[in-house]
Length: 147
Image (tube, rainbow, N blue to C red):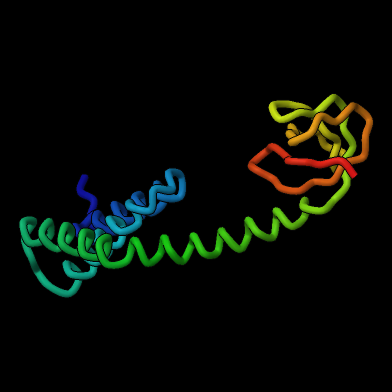
């Protein structure tokens, strides 16, 4: 039994699709360009009759050229968007009031902020059950100071 629809261009399209879906699972921001290279190769085969050597050359050149030209531009674009998002999230913490649930010092401690326990540090020693102000946030640790 022969499968007529499984042509070279369909195979390259499917390879590109697998690479793009894999990029979603492993956000390395590299596989997307090889997926694009596979799709360009599929389009090339669709419009011209080229051999496997030419297909591989088109795939490799298209993938590498798009990777070299566009990867840093897209990474910079996403970094700027993420920086804006991070600033917005941090502003939801800074200047707000929390309550210590265990003593806090420069190494360890815990506070209750918006109904959630957070790791906390402070330049001063703060007793348990004190109202404090959040002055910065570093991942899951809040830096606090007493009023």
